[in-house]
Image (cartoon, rainbow, N blue to C red; front, side):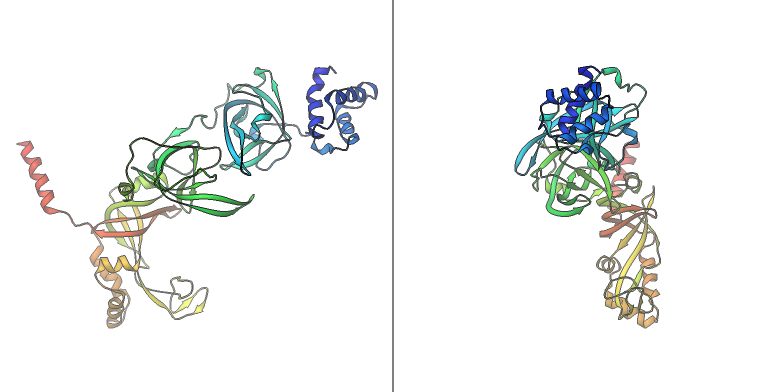
Length: 442
């Protein structure tokens, strides 16, 4: 075997020994084992590592994998890949800035994102074909991510070693600019510009231990979204920022923007709606909400077409607040019931429908009666159904405007209503508009 052919293995042995033995010494001993003692290459490598007190298990012994075969949390992974995209940035580790590389690797089977955690150790460029040994994987963005740590060995290969002509990359290396109102569960690598309406620092438990997350609400003229920043980007309330390299995942039935240390966050200096302008709910159609899969602080205009069971005068468990029947809670047994008012209304905006859950305070406002008055009516009529009947008589076929957060699940869309009103038509304004249109026709 030629000296050039052994160079990669010498570096692999040196890596396993943390550089404690000179490369020339390793080369001489490796050639001796192979040419004099006639042992296999792998046996020679392991023997040398044991001789100097190292751990042969650190050698890469696995076969080369294809990207499509990768799963999360694999160790000692060998790959032959092409660098599709390459970026460099600094992250803060223990108070010190550290350069890292990140981007996308691809082979004949597909593509995956990668992070090289020490940019100074690796010297490759976009378009290079690399033989990588001792990589490891972690789950990021719901997919396996390739990581190059301090045990990784990277060797340039012939450019024709990887042919990507027959594959379609699963996602573009370039980010896609989207409005907040367009965000949908499953989006990757998006760029979003928005004003930070709120932000708070929290510590959460993850499979990899406790992590600090900066979460809040971001808005533009098309809507609002909750966000989670898994890195300290020094986000401040009222800042307008452009986030490049974010992704969207559903959280409790609502799409949420996420971005980590690989994202780029920069202050936006252009004209942007004010906090006051953005604090108002954004009018959307129900079909539009179905398409994106839910959202926060949304305004819907429609008509009440049904009042569902469970509306009107109801009774709750005083401990768990679940709705109960005959003073029996499924969790706490016989209890002293708490009376409450609620409406579960079906709203139709002409394109689609959603279920609106309306609490006691708003129900009292819509009906014009208090809970105590509703209780008194029910006692007089000896039936709590009288309250539901009143809801139906007052709300069915009425145009309404409701706002709140909308979730989506297998049962469809549901809004937890934060405000509601009967939207009586402005007859004078409509008559003026109609008259103007008629005059225009004459």
